[in-house]
Image 1 (cartoon, helix red, strand yellow):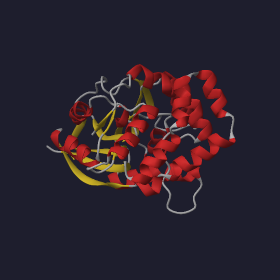
Image 2 (tube, one colour):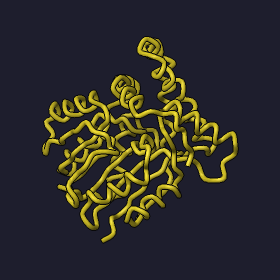
Image 3 (cartoon, one colour):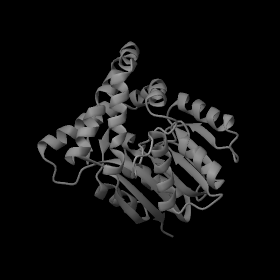
Length: 278
């Protein structure tokens, strides 16, 4: 695991409160990466990432879902609209909660997802009440990842599943240069640590899960950052970021860093589907 302990939780919260507008302008309603199979648009690629994960996890209609790190509600709305899931989304950001709630209401989604502003490392849900835990690109921001996985297992019914996508540290051994690349991403994207694929498997297993599926989609998602870089360079968004504060220019300035880290193998993008044992 690559650690960058200088990150603070309040900075992460402030980042998403202010930068949600950047995500929406530069990318779209899904705050996560896109998944490319060919020459799809970025909008289609974002939806495909959700579709691919739902198929991998074999999400059943009308499942009770907790979406950890729901962002602007893109996946929560998709699961509710397409599979009639009862979804509770959790975000650290008050702005994202309002955005997600409004998006679900404006689209007339039924059943209507519910969104909570809460810290994923502190929130509690009744034991055994969820069929599926869903998390796309959130666990990077957690400070005690093993403890989160232990707590999350309590929320699932026996046999329930956890579907997760995450930015990962590359496979060991990493060179000194690759470690520095990864730390640069942690700094710019406000990640206190990045675990490897093996780390995540270990955390799942120690928490009482059986990992059913895991793999890497790095090549399928890295175009996300090529497109975002092009959009930043063509627009005036960097000037707006300067007006809002140093952390927001730091975020934009590290788009190239994550693309470089993907290309060098310092970082990977991985999927996991795990099942609660017992």
